[in-house]
Length: 103
Image (cartoon, rainbow, N blue to C red; front, side, top):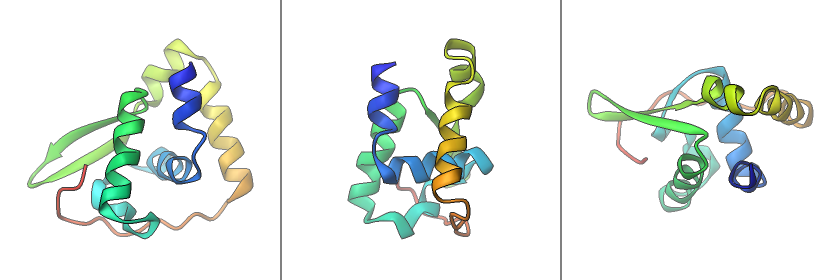
């Protein structure tokens, strides 16, 4: 639980998780949130906490939220977090999917 809370304490990671709750996204789809180096750090924190999964999709990497797995261990937790994020910023932009590897 501590790893989840730590990963979700950052606003950039909150926005990534929120967007992933809408749909899986290529790692390059978050370019508006910061530099590649900074985003790679955030991706690693989310993966380490068990919040995201990354899989190869052609020549790119597709990131998805592990909502079902988290829900089994912590029922209602992630849904409540997502609801809170949506209440703070209900219209987060969703960027078009990119094509290069960044995760």
